[in-house]
Length: 184
Image 1 (cartoon, rainbow, N blue to C red):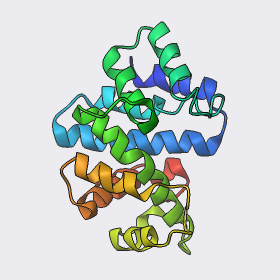
Image 2: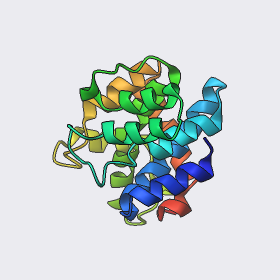
Image 3: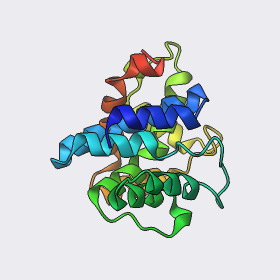
Image 4: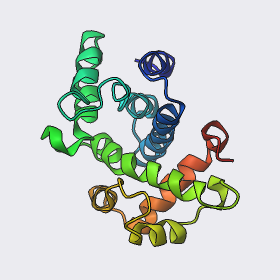
């Protein structure tokens, strides 16, 4: 269970560059929260990198993330990882309980929303994204309409943070890999 193996597995199943970048963004945010909680950064990074690796091939609620979890179980990934991945999709019935599970749920929708905010800026750069602009765009229901705003709010609450703090943390985490995301 290391980052290199997780990357290889993710890229084997996911060819979409945008989906790969989403998982990189979630990985960066998970690393941030692992450090914040004094947890195993590599383990949390692997969870972030693999949470959607089955989505491109199995995008339905009947298959994702179940197919991916089955693959991970067959490869010997521990329950702690597979349970975290199950918990990021609210329809699985697996409630986020650990800090790792709560963090994955909290950053998943928010990372995608922050990318959308960056892409409408003239610079198309994460370096220009501010908490205020993210919150303003959250109020516009037509903007990135598939992103569940209630999940972003619930994620902050699960982590015991204000929405502003959570958004700031995730922006900061994503800025650290802005080049990899093509949003420098």
